[in-house]
Length: 214
Image (cartoon, rainbow, N blue to C red; front, side):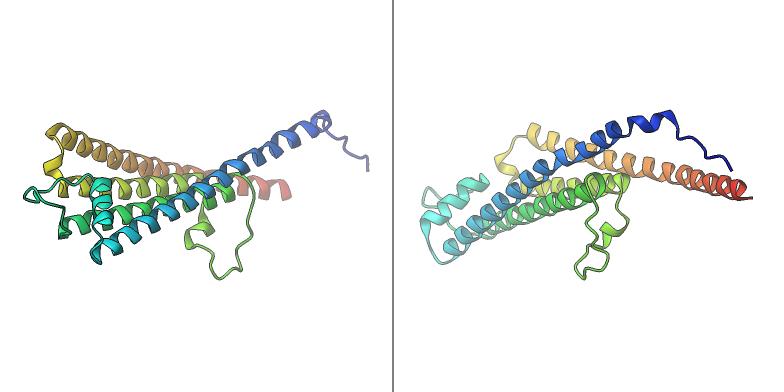
């Protein structure tokens, strides 16, 4: 039986290999995001230490917190006093940091797994549940959902401290949040429309393979 000659395009194999290897150029980007994650961890603990010190009666820590959250409550012309609103705004700020940190982890782990290289975490007990079926479409939907959560925290912080913001700022933040919601719905809907097409394409490929075997 005569050997089937290799296609001429096989001579270009080094070029596609070189192009495919270029995906490793993204590695420094993910390392940079890990460093950004370290900055967020440091910022979280600084804010938490200031909150604990303010609860213990440290006036300078309380002043730092009030300035960081932009709170301008009525203190009767005296020094700021720790109240429920200040605590709530600080805690919401800490939650905001945690949610952004979760977003970073999702981008780092999911992006590396999808666009750079497999991590082979199937047997690891701490493998994230969502990582087992992650792809570009799923990652986009999860990122959009995470951004909505972060926007919700920002909007809640603004409404709690509404007296220190103009109506224009409140309106624009609300509109931007609504745009995020609509964008997430559009991304999820588009992904749902694409799934039947991908399933039918796989079915066609399966039928073609069976026909070739027979």
